[in-house]
Length: 141
Picture 1 (tube, helix red, strand yellow):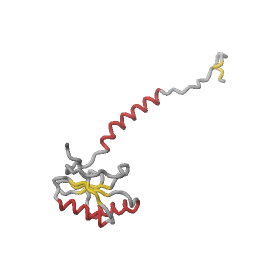
Picture 2 (tube, rainbow, N blue to C red):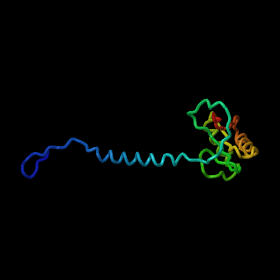
Picture 3 (spheres, one colour):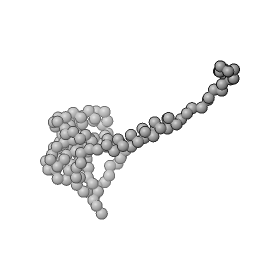
Picture 4 (cartoon, rainbow, N blue to C red):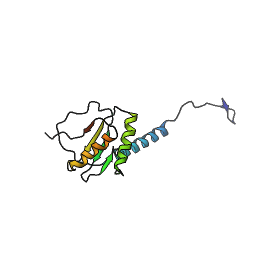
């Protein structure tokens, strides 16, 4: 034990002050709550309505090629347009090599030309993908 100048023994404090830790935790919680919705944005497309069966394994995030109404391609949730068709093939081939069972999907805008949707499917097929699904919205009741 420590002895003070006046000859009295000082008691050691064996407690941890957790108030600053709680303050930091609350600030981090607020930061994550504000930034989380901003990170999950992607390209907005108007999906066609169809009464289709949902995916069998919803836990696995598929590789998605998005086609907007103007025929531009996007990969997964990137907001940046794909520079070339070859880029889609390269990315799809790399993902396919790492995980051959991963689902590959095309998410086409309802107003997109059918030609662009088929072109996205062909690019995935050239990369070696055996099966390509189409993403739709359930119809309004």
